[in-house]
Image (cartoon, rainbow, N blue to C red; front, side, top):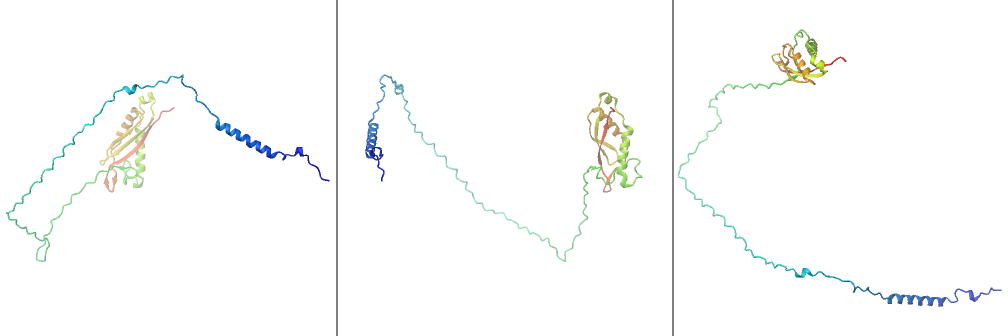
Length: 240
């Protein structure tokens, strides 16, 4: 037995009618949207003032001046005419004698040429590289390889022997190191080259000590006496 459908609840019963109604509604809305008119607002009540004052201004009339072009530069001066003058003086030809010799010519012996000796500039040789150190009095009998040590020991002994702490430096609490650079000249005399000290009182005492160094046998480099340079520090220290 087949089930019976109720025609009142069939959704497809009026589908064509609903479709036509939708098309008609869309057409009406489209027509209203196209035919809708808008109107501009009335601005007749507003006063609009236009500034036409610039129309009354007098514009000056300009005239372009026709300035004539500058005159052309003057032409360059004509070149001078060079006159060729005949030289009537006779020119004597000079015969150049050949310097080559032949067997018949005697060869003149040249005289002895005297060569001037050029003195080498004096160069101060540092204590570290000098070949023969200066001999401090008392180091003459020491072996050659021990003379540097003997020289340094004698310098230190000289400083200790002549050292005197200045009273002015003690009162002022001055202490520090004085660096002394000195030179032993070719004749064995001693000259101070440079001195750097923290206080003048200490520098004065160090200078006094170095000026008491005795005359020595000068140092030698390659067998010739030379000036030797050396630097030593002298320490001034107060007991705390």
